[in-house]
Length: 188
Image (spheres, rainbow, N blue to C red):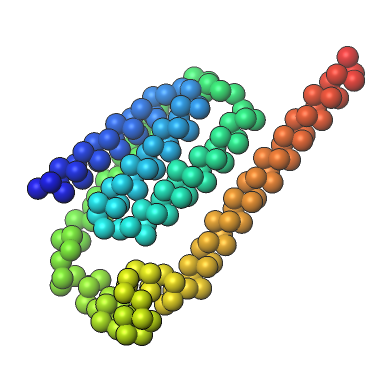
């Protein structure tokens, strides 16, 4: 009962933060609230016993994404310009996507069901054999670091490369902006 109350509270806080992000026009506040949203997501994932996913969400969502968005914010305006378009089409697209996702989850097994396909296949083998095979008691660590080691390394390399690429783009824009300022001063 307490776990359900914690989960519902975190979910309510996530929805409230998402609504605040949607209606805010101050971009610095939006970046900060996006970091809060990511940390709340990580807390909800910890509550659902998905600690590895929570760690990734906190590191990438609150850490790297916030730094990249703040870096981008130094090159843009601080306040979002009001939109002249109607929000009806984006609202319809989001509603249709949400309905499709909910429809796709209707036949899923119950959370934690021991007879679900995910529990009957490779998961049972990993749970039974990983402590003896790898001599590491945490099965999640065994799966991520050993059985899927190259996959995890590839994911880390992709995230690192994307971060370096964005930083290089931002530094190039900053240099061009400075050159444009000096060019304007010289022509004046």
